[in-house]
Length: 197
Image 1 (cartoon, rainbow, N blue to C red):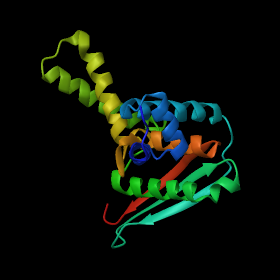
Image 2 (image 1 turned 120 degrees about the vertical axis):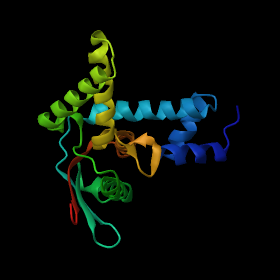
Image 3 (image 1 turned 90 degrees about the vertical axis):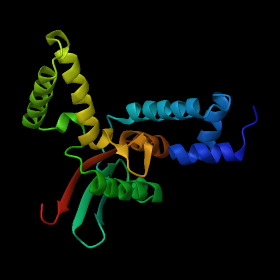
Image 4 (image 1 turned 30 degrees about the vertical axis):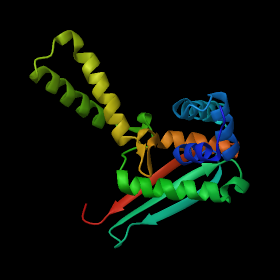
């Protein structure tokens, strides 16, 4: 199948991957857009896993103040070298993460950082909802586990759908940047401030 520049552009818009990576993904998947997206996500994940153990002692702190000055976010994004920290792609990622935190209000970066008391309270609510709806006791744990996964997807930064492209999670965006830059990158911390809350 002929891979057109329009197909490459469409895949780039969906995934934020590099032009040559998009072209290769489309070639490998015979022009199938969905398979090409999966191919790029797997490639990014593989690179991210290889880099995961490396220290991220360089990086940037980026701020975002929403119009009117009633909402502000500060994020720290780390990388391995100051060379990467100075690239436009890295700075744009930090800016996007700050804007995403302002819009989506996550409570933690990952599942592991969700406070135990918050998780315990959510599990208790889900269990009670399942009991009240008359679900059989033997499937309660499965119901609760499914709702907890959805809860994590709603409140954990890396699992949230990216506000500028809901086809990707924030983790997908991070993995694509790791693959593009060739070094470990991490969202280290964030703070969100809102007047009157």
